[in-house]
Length: 564
Image 1 (cartoon, rainbow, N blue to C red):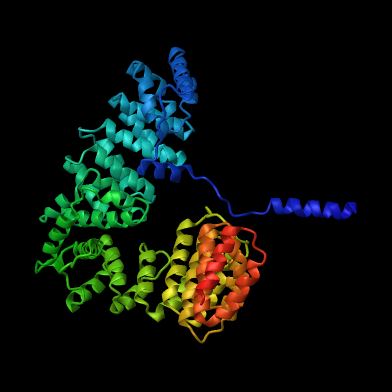
Image 2: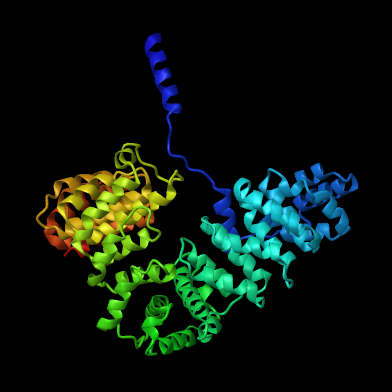
């Protein structure tokens, strides 16, 4: 008995030390999300916490102690910047500088660095610009969460003056490999001053270069620079391209986390008129902003639900778009041409796009999306091959399943793999279906959901393919720990009309999650309309016998009555 207990204990301990996918809070990501969405909180100055922090800071000044000040500044910058200004304005600026420089600007706590930088900007300590630049260089690799605060503080310090070191620092991060730092540098460049031509041109060039967070850059830039003014400057190709890029970025942002508020005061109708005018010029297809403006016109006309007055069926225009997909000398044109080819379903561009389908290609994600939209069946095998190069497919389906999103290594490759899972829904084949059935057991819920949706779509298109493997997966996914996954699995049962799951679905009518329960009722109705009325009614009546909740009983009765 003791041996068995010891064996179980050892087995349990060994499992505890197994490497598992981690769900972690990322200060860097979270701080940026809060910063750019304006989600900082405020509290009255008479709160106990404010009084305590103020007392600690005042004590640090009285004792001339940088250590004590650092301890007091370990507080969230977004919540405390305004309150810290109230406290620091009571102390001489030279005292603030002496306590902050140099220790706090190089502190190992990111909140201390951020708050110190914000206070230097507040007191206009322009003599600390070089020190702040040095700190930023270190922050970029060591305490990244402070970066957004520091580079914006630097720009505010140098606002209204030409400062070569500041410009070099901001311009450097406009092309950073980290997309969030590019957003931060865009914000800093706008604070530094758009009237300074030396800072404006590099900023405009960066706005034309597509990257993962181009929509955030567009939102940040539009708060200072109006895209209409850029578009009207038709003598400057970069200005026009930047204006069109901001429009496309804002429309993307409006569909995502920013909502339509980011489009206020943008004068979209006037922007469309200006771009349409540019597109009507005889030399439009020779311009370096051809694809960029064409994409902005297409998206904006769809958003406004108006005729773009651009003939996208014109052979010359379509040929030019296909040509631009290989334009490696002009990044924003190539990327936007790839996106255009997908949105316009240009089958003639498929050969070009297939040649670009490489793991290390800068715009591989956009290429994957475009191939999925074009629905060229030749793309299926290359996409499956690419997926196997990006991630360990076996490993991802053998780790078990997580209910929550995961932070894992190689996020870029994993994101591209997710794009492949999504795009495969338009490329039905036996090999694709087998792949999706297997990958619907992925460890991450968003990947399972993508594989599930595509699996149902592909099976629905392949009427003659065996139902059993798909039905088996849906059977497992209806109890998935992710609410989104199990809800979509129930929807898939209705789409594919799998009658063997009727009795089980009837039991799910008492589910506590409203969205899941609603989908169960909807799927049962769909199955009844698909010719399985007798089975659905029998299952519901059986369930009704054990229901004690009068509200659920009434809903079940109403569903039975609706079957006719």
